[in-house]
Image 1 (cartoon, rainbow, N blue to C red):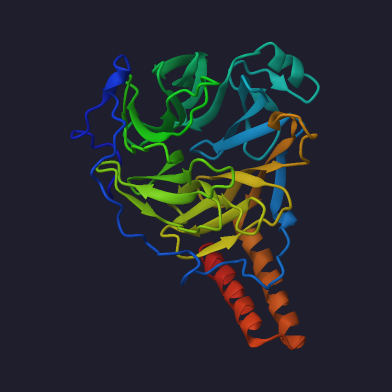
Image 2: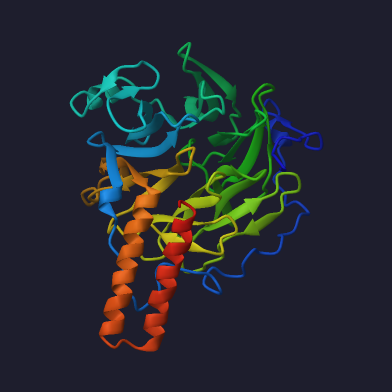
Length: 405
């Protein structure tokens, strides 16, 4: 299997020479899309005219709540531990760790037990420190994360055995974010030049690959500012990410697959009217998980690796997002946002939980709901087109359920 890491042909950029980082377009052209459109010839769990199903609540468990604006759950390679971060304000965010099936929440760095009662004082003591977006090394001994310890974001690691942190890659002229380790020890992430208003934000971003041993990185994509690439992960030796147009608050992102050797990309979704983001691939079940607003609210979806078949797992009225697979593909951990923050207040004043969904149980529930919906339509004498849509929805859930049987 082709894997990321054969970088003999890639000239890494020393962060001490940021001016050498290329910002021009590469000569690579887009590979043919795996599907010209998800809505053309692709199965969908939400088709105009059919009532939405209900979130399979019995398949979902809340793991962490009452701490504030929780983000970015990531599961250890052995499936036993979960890291996530909570945002306190624009400059303060910290990482926490807990058992993946629930239990006490502890500070990743200090080991202190964190509860809703002591959370505020814990974060107040760390005012201005942002250490977040933690991901696991393949051996489970290290958590990689982004940190603002030198002003702009750099990539650091935390050794769990020795409780030691080390800054790996930093460039004062770039924000480097969302680290993800490749199988041979490189780091994939996204980043961009610091914005004028906030040094830890950027107007647009590109995908990079870093060598943590040398403290160097190389840009894989080369946006001209009209698009941004974010939230990369690994799929079959290529980089999975979302690509969003810039310049509009309502811009919809697509999922793309990028060849790290030549920068060529394949659009997996290509849906102008839907916003798909934060993709993760699981090799065991050969499926993608991501969140999409195709049915008006951000919810969890899964699809085949080529994007040709997809189905919706949650149907919340408020966002469910940032999915992460368990190693065996049986569960998806995610963020569930609760009530909106009061008008005029910042996003971090909103509560968000960390939850987990059992995918097989959810698919069973949704298959049952789809079957009932089809029966009702047939008994009510609905038109043939609507019945056909309901039949296609049912068959889609059956298709994905077979992956787990």
